[in-house]
Image 1: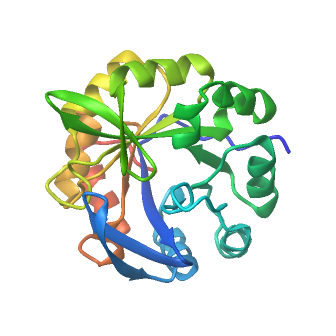
Image 2: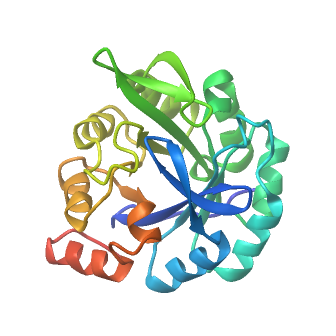
Length: 258
């Protein structure tokens, strides 16, 4: 099934992320200590109604547990929301992507499978179009280097974040979803400098993830990190900042928002 979704990249996008485990939304800190955060379908409908630009659903244990992303959840979300959404977790083949798209997803995200077999990015881009393929990169600083991690952050590699970002673009990815594991769930702000550097070395859109705790953090990552989109979970799930409040603030800061 070809992917026909394209997004205007002129405005900055606000993207709630729903990490799903066993059919429930969960959220942790630094990728551990997960807490239940609600029903993903109900939350998706709420965020769409509040003005979210897109949604991301990640089955966070699909790779480590060797399970496929739940098609049923995607079908249910597609019936409830009218904004684009991306699905990731355990996607390894063209058939996996076909199932997600037919179930109603607009884009798919691959992470560990892309690192293990980089040619998968090219295969999927050729089959479905680059605009449909998001490569998620989880990384943290080890001995002064940003190192890519696999399996929901459980498995460190020896791959440099910025080298991998360049390669991902060359292989045909349409977007990069960069999550700083060091910032994830801390609410201390995004990894602005690293996001800016990725923005310098690639030409495809960058979605910043990990660390959002206030509207000001979004302003920072858009202005100084030059991110095309910003993704957050905790502050939306637990009501610290609403999407309408966030968009109003960003417009006041002269940041182009839908």
